[in-house]
Length: 336
Image (cartoon, rainbow, N blue to C red; front, top):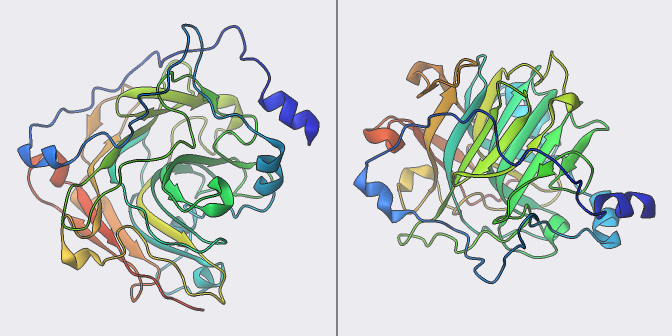
C-alpha cells in the first residue's frame, strides 16, 4: 500500500495532454430563467504555478478507507427493471433517466444539494456513460459520502470501472487511471455553495465525451477540461469505441437494515423547480464527428427503483435547458 501511495503522489509526468484535441460544439442557451444557476465552486485562495495542476494529495488513511468504499451502482439501472427487487437487496436506490443507444458523450447541468447521510451511506447526483450493459462506465457529479470525504458535505467526484465493479473500479484519484490536467478544479473538492429550498439554485455543468482523435474519455466541468481516462483502460466491447448508454439522476446507498438517506433536495419531483433537484440541458453526441443534439423524447426512459422513497419526472419544456430535463429525488426512509 505504501508503494501505491508513493506512486499516486509522485511528481507529475513531464508531458501529458492538457486539453482535448476535439471539442464538441455544445449548443449555447439563451434561456433567461437559467440565470438562477451559477458556478458552485469558489476556491479563490487556490492557485497553481505555471506548468502545474491542482490535485488532492493522497494520504495513507485515504487508501485504507478506499478499501471499504462501496461500489457506485450507476450501471445497475440498465440491467434491472423497476419490478426487480434484487436491486433493493444491494442497498442501492435510483431515480434516473437514460438514453440507450450508441453515442460518444453527453452533457447535463446537475443541481447541487447537501442531503443528510449517516457515516456508512452516500447520496449523489451524477451523469454516467456506459458500455457493454454497464460492464464499463464513467461517472461524474457530486456526492455526499463520509466514507470517501470524511465529512457530510457535497464534493465533486468521479468514478469509473472497467469490469463491472469487480476488481477494476476507482473513486476520484485513489488509484492510477484518471489523468488530471485542470489548474482550477481538483477532483474531490467541495461543491459550494449548495442550493436552497425555494431559493437560489446552483449546479455543475458536466460533460463526458470521447475525443475522436485520441479516443480518450474527457471530463469537462463548466467548460474547464478537468482530465481524462485513457482509451487503453477500456475494451472495444466497452468504452474504447463509444458508449451504448448514458444515465442522469440520483443514487443513494445504505445498508439494507438501515433507513435509506434523502436524495437530491430530499423532496419529491412533484414539488417542482427550486424545491426538487434537477438535471437539465440533457445533450448527447450521436456520432464521432462530435455533432451535439438533444436526445429524442421517446428515447429517454425514466427509472425509479423505490418510488415510495424517491422518484423522477421527465420534463419536456421549452428552451435549450428545459426541453430535455428531469426533476428527481425524495426523502428516503426505505428499509429492505
